[in-house]
Amino acid sequence: AQSVTQPDIHITVSEGASLELRCNYSYGATPYLFWYVQSPGQGLQLLLKYFSGDTLVQGIKGFEAEFKRSQSSFNLRKPSVHWSDAAEYFCAVGARETSYDKVIFGPGTSLSVIP
Amino acid sequence: GAGVSQSPSNKVTEKGKDVELRCDPISGHTALYWYRQRLGQGLEFLIYFQGNSAPDKSGLPSDRFSAERTGESVSTLTIQRTQQEDSAVYLCASSLSISGGLETQYFGPGTRLLVL
Image (cartoon, rainbow over all chains, first blue to last red; front, side, top):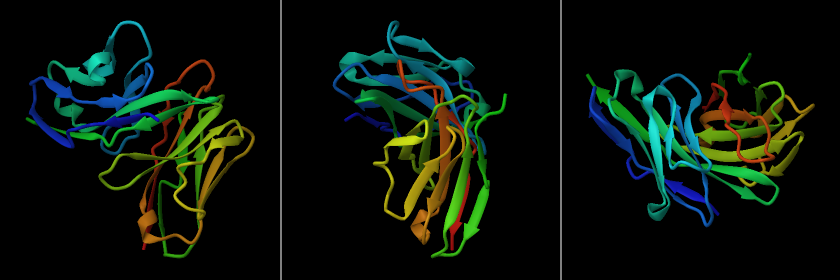
């Protein structure tokens, strides 16, 4: 069965600084990988996803993530953080299970941005 | 078009009472998911629907929890004899289809349940 970990519970960065949120997964085959963001008072929104092909994936709001099979990682990056990026970030991994696709979410990383 | 909607947005109930939480998915989305998010924690998978059937109920925490979906549309999550540990935000998501790969899940705003 697949699983996903996010080693950092909480991260604080200064506005304008670069950001990297870590995500590690466990799955026997090539996984489907997602990053979702949950802003205060709002629902979860998909930032980006990886299914196959280019291992560097571009998403919305200037985010990107890189799939590294050798490290079982799918880290999320942004070159310059904005105050509005303060939110909870969830990595998720999906895989086929018999007749349907199951998605498992990580525990989340809370991002604070210092002005 | 309209996104996923959930009602009520907030629910306060007394321990031992039953509650019903409603989810209206995006029209045409055949897959529907329920998750629970306790304060400060991640998403806990509860149940998944494909059409009106539920091939995966493995996340339901106890037999006090049940869910149904009618007409490949609205879904209701019912919690019987609520306990204080049921207090959480209950999130619903829908996706276009489960065939041909994993689709993006579109989440509703959630129902915040507080059991006193």
